[in-house]
Image 1: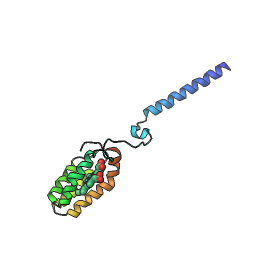
Image 2: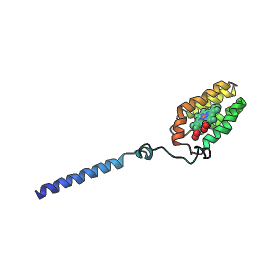
Image 3: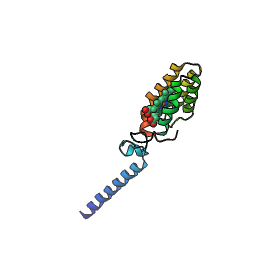
Image 4: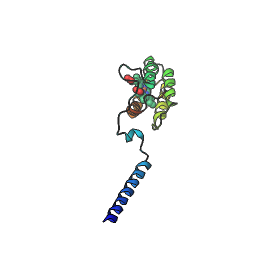
Length: 134
Ligand code: HEC
């Protein structure tokens, strides 16, 4: 009987060890492992300073757009195109397409790129990348 329980214990330890090794080997990003907890930023909320890209969008991008000046809008969109965040493969293409339209004086066409990118990436950016330099 003594021997039997010792074997059982050995199996128990062996199993726990295997489970630990399997857990350690999986490559789960910390944000997911922590149970989809919402990331907190020291910017962007009421009473806080604007986040880098948020501030840039509100000043540079917004004023270029309200000016209706195709060259200004194009250069702002080219700036955005040059800064694609990781994991957002269409970012640059959307911005460049908008810039090309702005250069040709197609302001409405250029504005379509604002919506295209906002629809596709804004929520994700705000949830995960807001504090990145821009
Ligand atoms: C390739 C992507 C992309 C393009 C193109 C783009 N934006 Fe944005 N924009 C964003 C992201 C991402 C945010 C969110 C930034 C944040 O809040 O941290 C944002 C935020 C904004 C905001 C701030 C909203 C708020 O209240 O905080 C304004 C205003 C804005 N964009 C205007 C524009 C305009 C106008 C255009 C087109 C002329 C444009 N954007 C094109 C990605 C883009």
